[in-house]
Length: 219
Image 1 (cartoon, rainbow, N blue to C red):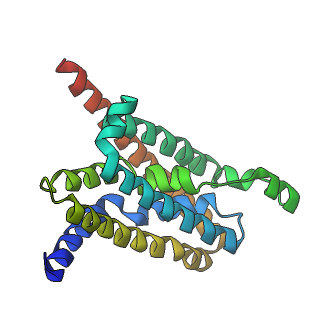
Image 2 (spheres, helix red, strand yellow):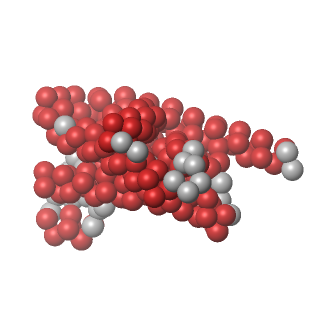
């Protein structure tokens, strides 16, 4: 395979994965969860979330079918679980204007003892590496011809890495957005985005319940 062909397939992966991952929808959640954190901690959360998301998607690319079979779970179960997590956080954003991270007192010792870390859940999963992203990655993996995984898997992984890099740039820009809006603007945006995230969560739940119904109705 030539370099141009490899770049073509990598771009196909990015184009297919980026709209589903849609890191712009993760920005309000990231801003709400990390609002009381120091700039260094916020950057660390963004970096860890993207690293976790990369390894989650890569793992499902290489071992996805085996993982699902081993634990007896389905994409419907992942959708419902992800929807519940997002729904709880979204409702907190709507009714308080902030997430649970804001309830921690401002004393450094108490903030340190709280050990808040949202990088894996919900930032990496289900926000960045959600059911849709996992399904897309597994779909690309299933399209790799037999005997071509030594070439095909690295191409898909490269596409995942580029998409995650774009997501990191989006999260990194959240600080500048917050400075532009100010405290009151941030509270208003947090409530609006909380409502939108509630809609996303309901969609996740509805899709998962529908898939469960289809799955059990065919038995």
